[in-house]
Length: 181
Image (cartoon, rainbow, N blue to C red; front, side):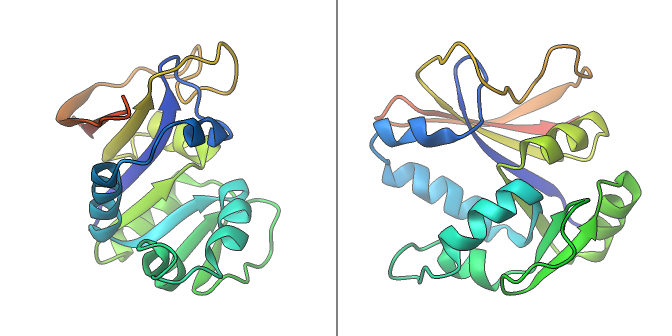
């Protein structure tokens, strides 16, 4: 049985949607190593529909020469949680259907290794509420946006996690890794 490992970019005020604001910060190779280690610990991807639809055109034509994460993103099995798509063309993609806690638990039990989740805010929120997230890796950028979709919405469920790791990068970004308790 694997773990569900979530990676999110977010602002100090918790906004994670459309992270184009990350482009204002130089990409620290140490941050790349941390993200690469997360990917390397996983055997498959679990994605929400919108993230799948953004990732597929962005990653499907990349090679290892373009980005060291390309082989993982393109060759790994990908499982898409969606109530609207019937098919997924990106290499090794499978439609799971609409969000279903039992289906995700079953997938977690079937995969020989960890499941990597990036973005997929609606999916991550639901999995956090249902206690399915085992590790939460937040890369917090030193800015506030004042508005936008937040990972932890008002009125969301309470959760207790244990701090497992912290890293700070020269860009001011901080990586906070939490494990579910």
